[in-house]
Length: 283
Ligand code: AMP
Image 1 (cartoon, helix red, strand yellow):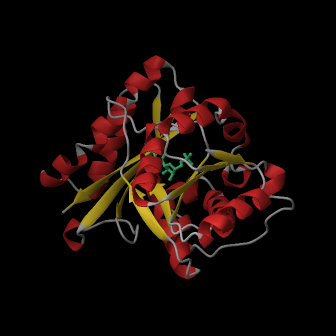
Image 2 (cartoon, rainbow, N blue to C red):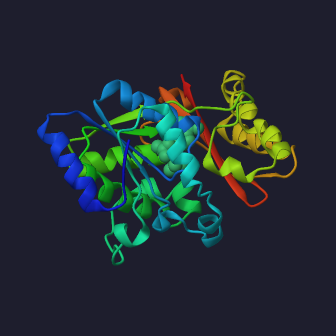
């Protein structure tokens, strides 16, 4: 596994690979790698002959300074995990100066997609995500890029950006990887105590009831209220939002009969740690 920290080194290596007509797969991450990340990387390995992983804790996507500062940074153990996986050919680990030598003042028109859910509660978050992902796409020029459905709204926005800018990149969507108790794997889970991690199973236990509540003819408002009450019945969890949206447009769902697939998305605080999760429901 090659490791490089500068854009020029990465470009040099990738130019050679492109000349060799290699299929390049790319997995962008912020590190503190877990099985969710490794599943994306293994999928890239099975599809492509050259796999690039990036690790960069992107400051522009954090709207909360404390969240940025406390974001786990365990780069040595990440490198070890990647080596052991045998699935990464090039690890790109730039620093802030390399990615943002000067402020990136670009504005991306994301419209409605950044006014709801994560966009509403984390102002500017998706502008930061798109800044870094487009920079990384422009450096790596992958044929395929792998993203997790855990960040469902992010995935929708990345697909829009690829369409809007005609990036010749196939976006590969990967299923959410969960702990055995159902908790969606996340780097932020490292900030939970063992007791909190166990209790956090309430989030997925609640989400899997949504289909049943739909079948029982509860209204969407009632279902959102039930999700909130159920999760908050376990201390110290506090729901920031529950939304039921159309899987394609992310528009709020009122009349279920008008939709073929919907997502129920939640953001939940466990003290200072913010967790997100979602479930797709086919109708
Ligand atoms: P992050 O390091 O949190 O920015 O995540 C990097 C990529 O891994 C994103 O595409 C995430 O959606 C994906 N990812 C994170 N957690 C999971 C998970 N539990 N299951 C599947 N994909 C995930």
